[in-house]
Image (cartoon, rainbow, N blue to C red; front, top):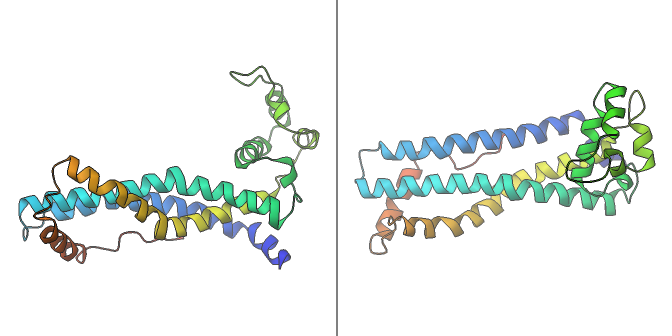
Length: 223
């Protein structure tokens, strides 16, 4: 079982899925936050007040979902997946023992992928801005030695665990968490803008449902 997991998280296909999922979600949701309200505003079958309400609601929904997804869902799942892999799945083996969190690993990985040994060595000796410490002090002795090699170890298991949790976060976050959280912001904002009239709310909601049936589904993850 563990062997199958190791093979999957170190595959190039997983990296492509994780990257394409995040990018496609961001692009698709951005386009929908512009296109769907625009479609509503040009609909001649509904009155002006309802169009403003529906367009504003659609824009707020798409925009808040995207903001929550990028600012909260992806980072939380990335760090959570790293912690789970380090403490449970691999139990401080296969390179996880060298890193405290995702940020530390990604910083190391970026430096390790630099093809120039001299550039890597020079970077290790640089002083970190705002701190009285050198870059190399962020890494243990093993990592420092790796960075001085022609081809440093990239610790693919660590990268794979981060990418897998990112993919899971994209699917669950968009399907469950982001929509639920976004609704907490939508109605207060609509009321603040004076677009949500309690006396007309039900009638508007019915018309909005009819309009939404004319458009595409809210969010569709294309991995």
